[in-house]
Amino acid sequence: MTIISVDAISKQYGTRALFEDVSFGLTRGDRLGVIGVNGSGKSTLLRIVAGLEEPDIGQVTVASGAHIAYLRQMPEFEGDPTVLEAVFAGNSPTVRLLRAYEELSARLEQRPDDARLLEQLSVLTPQMDALGAWDAERPHVVSSASWGCTTWLMPR
Image (cartoon, rainbow, N blue to C red; front, side, top):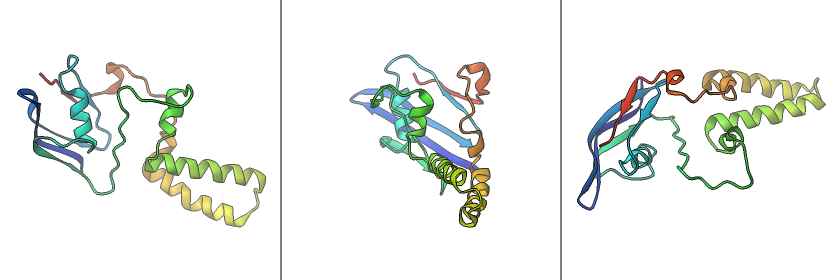
């Protein structure tokens, strides 16, 4: 099932075209690499896919229930968080579920026989399974060889 569909989008600033007629689709588990020199439109393309900016032409469709998180190229963080801390400071459905699970686990440590808390855990566990949240904290190696990228876009 296609989660994100980008259909014939184009974007230009003034008379300068950043990209023209870009189309692709992503399904669950796909990875996308966007490569180009500075100023070629990589960040603009990602902002358009995230719904933060409109294309001049074309459209982006996101499947119902899907959530796109966007981290700016030069984000401003309070303090000096690790990458993992910055990711988990977000508000995606997976992050919210992980927070709920962590809070429930902490309460269960204090009251391991509390039937109400155990019932809540039995509700959260299948939700964690469905979102693949158990793997959310697994380290992610950032190298193109390990990404298994199936699609590479190279703006002009």
